Length: 227
Ligand SMILES: [Mg+2]
Image 1 (tube, rainbow, N blue to C red):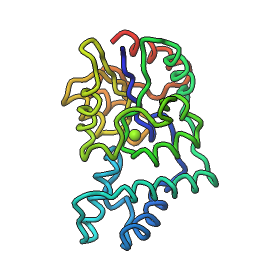
Image 2 (cartoon, rainbow, N blue to C red):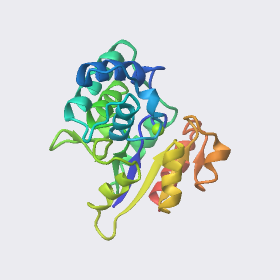
Image 3 (cartoon, rainbow, N blue to C red):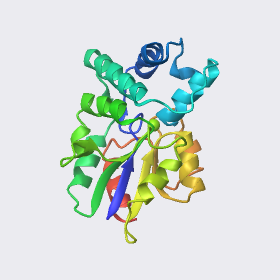
Image 4 (spheres, rainbow, N blue to C red):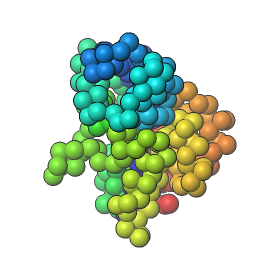
């Protein structure tokens, strides 16, 4: 089996400006009683566990463990916000996911910094949730941002469930994601739809796309199917 592990933000989808930041302010207030927002933790590419812990450190209220309540409330806030201003799917992503989901040798999963609640809100808003939900449990599949502190530790979450013949490939846009695939020498497709340029991403992977539009998704399918 080939596991195609997709990041969400700026890889498959784009959320309206400030969605995560605005909704984090309400979550920090409601759950921890502090004035904070996620941007103080430089959140791009980080896990939700790391973002919340770093932000709490920055405001002088460090925590040992992120309570489930924080993930839940942030996710609910994002879902409400996206009902008013929905996210959008990036070019070629639906075609890419549809083609891969027809191949019985490929399994679509997530490798994302978002915890399940926030991931679900974004995927439902963009109607991509159907590609990543296990119908038997009705839960998202993959390695998510409440399962590890560092993004690279999410690779271990995936590896634990692999059989000896299984392979995986990571599809991501961030510098943290790019560093991760290079450091661990794992197959990757990097896409310059976030805040990192195509040229910069080429330092980390041989498979770099400006986006999956103009039928470039077809090339991505063949890369994934031939790892
Ligand atoms: Mg991303």
